[in-house]
Length: 296
Image 1 (spheres, rainbow, N blue to C red):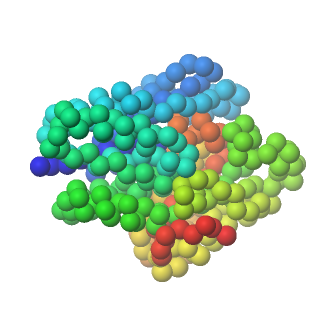
Image 2 (cartoon, one colour):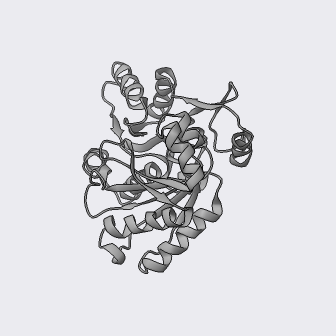
């Protein structure tokens, strides 16, 4: 029996990467000034247009994929003859894993001999994407669904996420940064350095003055936590919310310090995550020398 890797668009990969590794996906839902959209990788609304709305002060929010949508998605794959390994956006920031698990349970009676494995990735944005690509590579190498499911659960915390933002408007709105800290940050050019914790939650680690220093701090953290330090030769992803120059600055630093890294891929932060970060966020992802710590 063949199987597919399934996920959602919150993993912030390009359509080309989804297709390269044959990763199936559902579109998450977002709202711009009260109007509902489905994330279809830019067909309905380009990422540039989305961030133009944000720069004009649009009210943005998201809603998760419903149980019914998961049922329809899973059923279609099952009818095509595939078992399913489905990865969800971290339970630390989303309830999608509960909906996906409920849908899988409801399909058991209809497909009693089939496998639907649900994995809480404990990852977000292109770190979530990197996790899916690692799974896709192992599937391509011939790993069966049962062993890949076990590997996913055992290694998901090895994908490290470090990020920062020079625009705290949407972090204040979402309660991740206090209003007072946000105002002072704007006045004194203080930018928060954040990570995704072992539990898959966003965590503020430090407050760094000036954009250049906080962007450099991302690469400092990679040197501290990456497998083999500066000899790291694994995958490296960067994502950004409408600040490509900052992403390219981080890429150049990575290439300068990590001579064995073959490629550094840059992706847009998509509408699901971008609705909560706003503009000005840059994130750096890599695999660590072990499970990510409760970072310090």
